[in-house]
Every structure is written in structure tokens, then in C-alpha cells.
Amino acid sequence: MTQLNNALASEVQSFGKQVVGVKLSDSSFENLRKYIYDNCGIYFQDNKKYLLESRIQKRLTFLSLGSYDDYLVYLKSSNGSINEKKYLYEAITINETFFFRNQPQLDALVSSIIPEIIAAKRKLGKPKIRIWSAASSSGEEAYSIAMIITDLIKPKYPDLDFEIIGTDINHAVIETAKEGKYREYSIRNSPIYYLKKYFVQSGNSFEVNPDIRKFVTFKLLNLFDDLAMKSMINFDIIFCANVLIYFDIKSKMKVVSSLYNSLNKGGYFFIGYAETLHMISKAFSVVSYPKTIGYKKE
Image 1 (cartoon, one colour):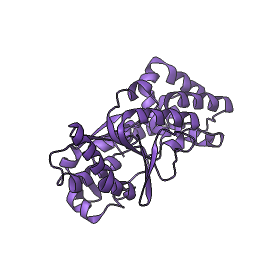
Image 2 (spheres, rainbow, N blue to C red; image 1 turned 90 degrees about the horizontal axis):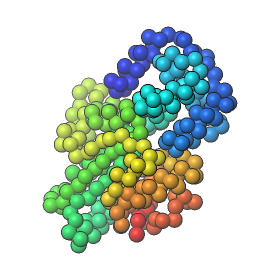
Image 3 (cartoon, one colour; image 1 turned 180 degrees about the vertical axis):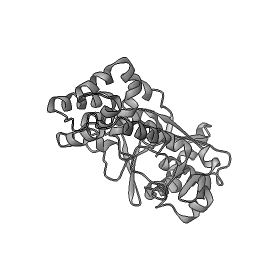
Image 4 (cartoon, one colour; image 1 turned 45 degrees about the vertical axis):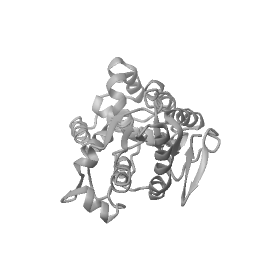
């Protein structure tokens, strides 16, 4: 847990039980659901009403607000719109990830995709490859990519530059990613070779070594923010795993279209195991690899 979350937990406890038991009415749920959807594209189905209620109730307690309607008013106020959104996004997003989570995608990256992109770039005289982990959570995916590039790609192509960017809507997990310290749960799927080479262990904590941390830049980004997305351009590879499952069809189409625009021609797009672009986008070509598929911008 980050220092931000520790402080938040402490302050919540200090307020006692002022609003425990406050229920989220159907009308308040609809209004909050619409606000969340309009601002970040996440859609809470009717059967997720209790989930939304339980996740936001701590914010009501912390802010000493008496109802979810009051909370929505605060969100829309000048202070709330600037500061409270980040706590709302922390409350409603799920950040389940770990190092080397999708090994078949990483294998495809090393064996086929990066060599293909390198060959194309050399013809154009553009030696830099840009990779974006578009829902990086606490950074495990971006750091995994940095490790395999450092270990398997850079020795073969020492003249090439790589840039890796990790983004997320959740402020707390971005701070964790920048710090680069993880517990055993996050490294449970990591090969022993990489654990020994790229981590420093201290008790139950595993810290990514400085060379790998310097390889990745992390920043806050809302994939549903049109203006912010216009700055995310000229990427060769984009990973966006386990994000589309939280959107409805309309939101999925919007986000995927923006990510398509962020890719260079010939670039690749990867999503999670449980996700598909079926009925969302026909703009990509599907490319098959052992145990996984990628989407290519022709």
C-alpha cells in the first residue's frame, strides 16, 4: 500500500462512523453511474450497485458527507472536480496484476514483433522504438517489458533506442510503479533468472533495480480523455490488458479508436486474454502467435 493510501486509511478511521449504513438509492446510483461513465468510460451494470456503494462509502466518511447525492455535488464542485476525481478513480478501479503476467505476448514481442519493427524502422532511418503500457496499474507489465528488452533485445541491437511509458488512471498505483517496490504476490510468476538479475530483495520486499526503473516513465492518464489522448502518439506497440472488460460497447469503440490513432503504421496492439475486438473495431489485422494473438495497424 502506498503512503497515500496509508494516510487515507488513517484519516478515514479518525472520522469514526458518521455515515456508516448510508444506502445508495436507485436514483443516486444512476446519477453516479452516469458521472463515472461520462468522465472515464467505466460502466457499472445494475448488479454492481452494491459494489459502487461499498467502494465510495469511505469517501463519504472521510469528507463527512451525509449522502451519495452530497458526494456527487462535491464531485461537481470546483474543489471536487480537481482533487476528488483521483480518489474516486482509486476507489472504483481494480488493479490485479503481476510480473510476466502474459508470457506468450512477451515471447511474441521478442521473437517476431520487435525484429519486424526494427527492420521497418531502419529502412526509414528511425532507430527509436516506443512502447506504451496503457493500463500499467502498479507497473509490473511495463517493468517486465523493460527487463526482456534489456536482456534479450538490446544486446542484439545496441544501436537502437527504446522508450517505455506506463500510464494509469489510478494515482496511487502510479506512485507505487514509480517507487518500484513490490511484495511476493507481484513477483510470484517471475522467472528465477529475472528475480536474481533485476530485483533487490529486502525481507518480503522486492525492489526493481535502478537501471530498469530509469528505463520506464510513468504518468497519470485517463484513456477516455480526448485531449490527453491526443498527446499519446507515435507508438510502435501498445499493451492495454484487462481494461475493455469494464467498458460498454460505445466506450470500448471510443478507447480502441483512440489507441489505434496512437499507433504508428505497422504497429501492434495487445489486449487481455478475456478480451476481444470483435464488434468493436475492424481497423486492425489479426496476427496469430503461439498461444496468443496481436492486432496490427496496417
